Amino acid sequence: MAVILAGVLTGSELTSWAVVHPTLWKLDHSAQVRAEKLMYRRFGTIDPFLMTATIVACFIAAGALDGRSTTLAILGGACYVVMLAITSIGNMPINLTPAPRWIATSRSCSLV
Image (cartoon, rainbow, N blue to C red; front, side, top):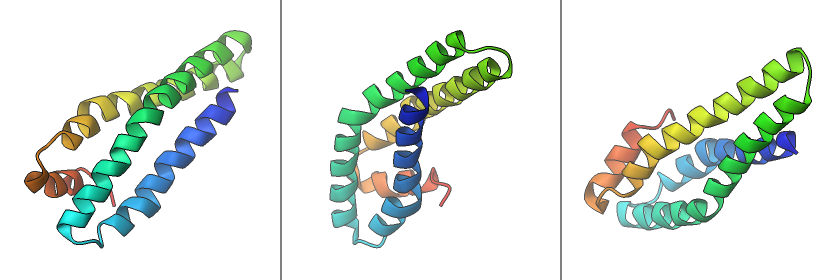
């Protein structure tokens, strides 16, 4: 279950970063802000549960495994904890930024 949840979460994040955001950045400012806000609202209904479930599943799996597999499951869970922290500390405040500053702020924090 941990691998399935991690795959879904990672795939979602990778698609958002590599496909969706670069495409949305080609829209005019008002259309982009509207699309991004709608997208983040949708992510906000799914991601908290998916992120939390992935983290919990990784640590539960670590408890059921032995040796190197335990270490890898713990490291995987820790990576998702860091991802959740970055989302909570970085992305969520950006998404609450007033619209005029929102695009510049969100782009300045992107790696694309």
